[in-house]
Length: 312
View: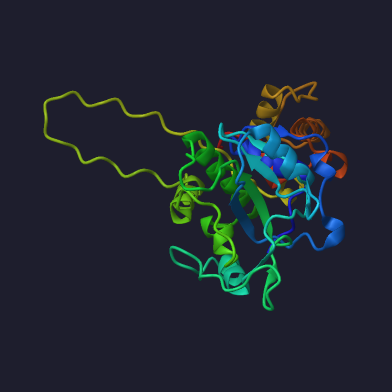
C-alpha cells in the first residue's frame, strides 16, 4: 500500500519516464476526494474510452456526465501517445471490483493473469477501486477493430511504468478494467499480459541484454553499441540532511547547473551546502512542485527526473 502521489509528483514521475504530458486546466485540484477515500493506492488500471477524438474525449473525462461526475480518470492517453492529465485525486474510473483481485495485485502473487473477477459495482462483496487505483483512459472505440498505434501503446507502457517506479511496484500492479470487474470488457484490442511484460522490461533496465553468440565468419566485428547511461540511485533524504561531503553532491550540482537551476556563487562542490538546497528547490519548482514540496531537500521522484550520472 502507498500514499497517492501529489499532482506535482505525478507530473514529475511521468516526465521522468519520458511521457509527453499536457496539463488540462485545473486538473491538479479536480477530484472526487469529498465523496470517498483516495488511497492507500495499490496499482494502475487501464481502460478504453469507447470514443473518438482527443479534444472531446479529454473534455468528457474531465467533466464527466450527469450520472457520473468527472474526473473519470487521472489521464487520457491519446492515439499520438500524449497523456492529458485531467484529475489530481480520487476519480470515477474503477468502481466496485473483486477483493481477491485486489489481494493478488497487492501481493503481486498471480501468474500471467490475476484471478477472474466475480464482483462488480453494487455487488455484495465489491470493494472500492476508485480509492485504490490510478486510472488511464485510452482513446479507442473498444470494438476490437479500432487500431492501437504503437505510440499510444508505448505511452500506456511508459505511464504505467512511471507510477510503478515511483511507488516501488512491479508490473503486476497494472491491470485492465475487465480484470477488476466481471461487468467490464475494457481494454479491448491488446492483451494485458503482453503489456505487463513490456512494463516489466522497462522497469528492469539494469538487466543487460544477452550477448549474441559469435559466428565464425570473416566479416569485421561490428562496433559495440554505446552503453546506456547509468544514473545515480536516490541515496535517501537522510543522506542529504546529514550534510555529506560526497562526489554524488558534486554530480547533482552539475546537473542542476545544466538545467538552469543554479544558485551557486562557487562550485558546485562535494560538500552539501545551502547553495545546493536553493538550487535543488529551483529544480523542484521547474518540475511543478510548490510549497513544502519545493523545500530543496531531494525526494525520489524529483531525483529520478534529474538523472544524476552514476558516481562510483
